[in-house]
Image 1 (spheres, rainbow, N blue to C red):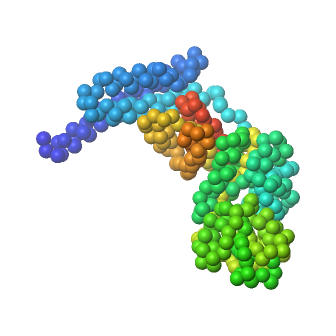
Image 2 (cartoon, helix red, strand yellow):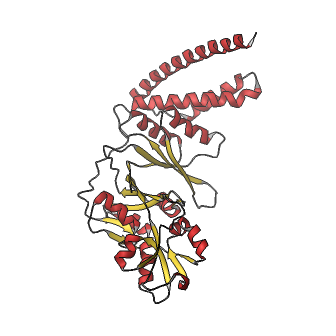
Image 3 (cartoon, one colour):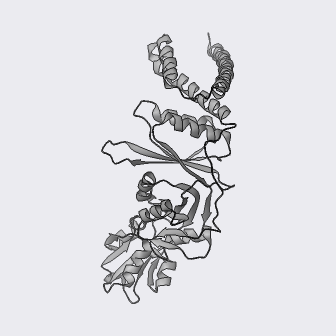
Length: 374
């Protein structure tokens, strides 16, 4: 056969495969109706492994065993999501309310007045008094206990990357993301009035801010020292008799009466940080268009492939993938995924149910709309 004949033959086989795939999915709907009627779970591990073992055994070309295994595993994953979609038509897995940002009585931020978290909080809650906590963990604790209605925490910077401490705490505390805010950050070098840059002995700021201004600090030769927060670093400068400086926002420096020695010192002209708004209970705003989950996957070949396939076949764009060590000596990691979708979408609910049934550690940690402010 020539090339055209071979390609025509492939097209014919593809049509047959598609026809058989549609026939299989129709049978799967029947299975879903039966399981729904008899209150049976969609995922049945033993049955799934039996199918894979049988397919591998029937594969005449042993070089294609992994290929046929991957093909039928993907088909079964599509089948499970289809079944979950059918079963969830009447029974919902998640109950939630709408956010009440205007009626919130207590909003927690880390640091002190002038912090970037406060600036992010103002974009959502407006001008009001915020409660400041000494650490990110104290913000999580306040939300968990009900002491604070909402908490505001940084999760990622466009220059320095993820805020690892926030992600570690996300794995530790129960909470839900209800909104995300992207805020443009303008760093400056600030010190007491009359301080000259050549006299400065050390620059204090949060680790992320120091990282975002690495070029400036290297060029000037200033010694850096990590501090809990940009605004608390500025406070330290204000209350110190030593010739030290802080990297903070211009607003923070002006509010404390510090002198701005250098402006716009971040490595990148566009420097943005994303902040999450967290609550104790799941809250879903009408405009929420992204879902966040945390999970672990088994140490088996193809595990990550299978995970990503679930989102692809449901036309869900993965917005972010983060991983953090679980810190139990195992080298295992916790994955944090944000993907496009609404909680009202049957496909989203089906994927969440599928992940919950198939993964040992899984938690949906919220849904949100990301708003960007300059």
